[in-house]
Image (cartoon, rainbow, N blue to C red; front, side, top):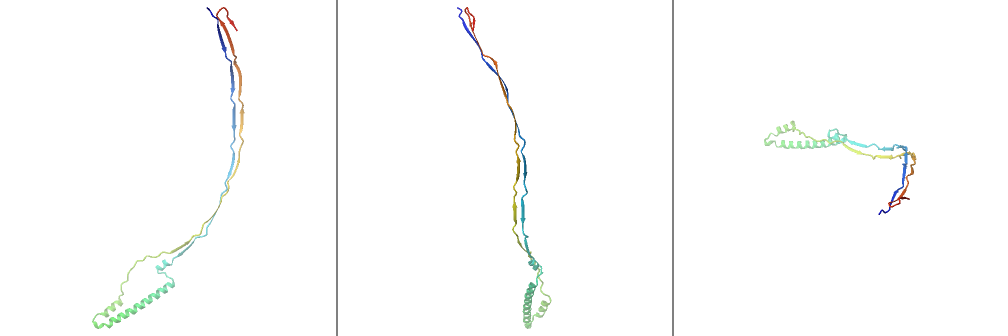
Length: 188
């Protein structure tokens, strides 16, 4: 038995598109800037430093003395020499009074008066000058200046090319139905 069969062929519709992408160009020139920095105002003031130098202690040690010190020293040395002379004369008188003791007192007194005892050499550290420093305060007056900024911003330039989409029908839809078999072949 030959049964009729139905065959269906279907073609789907297809859409075709041509797309042109949009383009955006943006240009912007650099901003123009002018910056000025005035110099700061600075004033520094200081009075002179006072330095007092007392060189007299050093000069005194070198035997360069003033009149007052020389007078005092001469007075003290004169008193010491006078007292030393009085005591020496008294001592020599006492020794001459005892001449009967048969010593050579006269010879000893003559030797002491003729040949004085040897002097002793001493090393001495000399004093340096005295310094007195009076420093004055430092006065600083600083005035800062503000920065001057001038800026001109340039606007951006934009250029837009619109995109395009073209839509077309690339393939139309279609349905074909066939009946096969049997005695009839029919197309609808």
